[in-house]
Image (cartoon, rainbow, N blue to C red; front, side):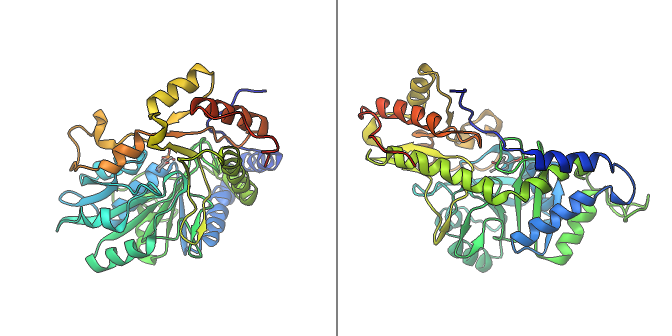
Length: 377
Ligand SMILES: *Cc1c(COP(=O)(O)O)cnc(C)c1O
């Protein structure tokens, strides 16, 4: 059995051929052929009017916040538990991140936890679809509309998730995705911004390439240099043609863990969104209190058995990075869930024997018997 990976891509000869083709057309009229094709297909699949590929998801968030005019004096509500990338661009723009608590069932913020953080300075809220999970967006959209707050969806971990007939990435004024090497669809490094509003799209497009008029050395504003690479876009375009296969494998990984742990009480795995489906970037396990196993003890036990796992995202306000940054509140659910949660190996190359071995270790750790026979998926 090969070593289990936490994350990792599934790249085939199909992608290799596309990259080769892009490398043969570095310059000239086709210089951005794959970027534009990828943007068009990605926007259509998500029922969005516009897409802008970027060097990363972090830069996509920055581009959107700049396009929205978020700046000094503004507050932006963010989840207490997420990857730092959701929040760093808020700080770059000179705005203040205000941390909101998460929900114990789906680990994302809710309309209630957002409402508790609104002040007259609140300009936007960044909702994160954590580990592929989604909150109930209906009350969140209503709240944002009522209070005049811009909704941003960080769907970096939710490619392939959907709720109430809309894909993750179709919520809010703008949404962002990541194609980092650890994500479901990868370009090594890369990201995408999805928008519906025409003028916001034009503004973000201008800011993406030094505020220059197309084809001219003539700059209208001082912007960023967040242009994507066509070679990376070729990889993304070809990966995207295999999107159903990639998401199906991610779901198989979650279902395999679920099936093999199904007889054990008080263990929580990624839930399905309201009237929808979870794309499960990363299968995540939260131990119920009855197991007396916190995150750090569980990680130590797994390490002792030679198995990989990672901690649930730390509450951001406990990190040195945010010691003097942002408005901190008491967010007890984030602390509680993070303290009992671990990410399970979720690489796209996992096989059933590896998941069996991992589940056998988990079962041993919580004092359960071996895997029941015929537990295969
Ligand atoms: C991965 C990730 C990002 C950042 O993606 P990059 O492409 O690495 O910049 C942002 N938000 C969330 C929730 C992520 O998981």
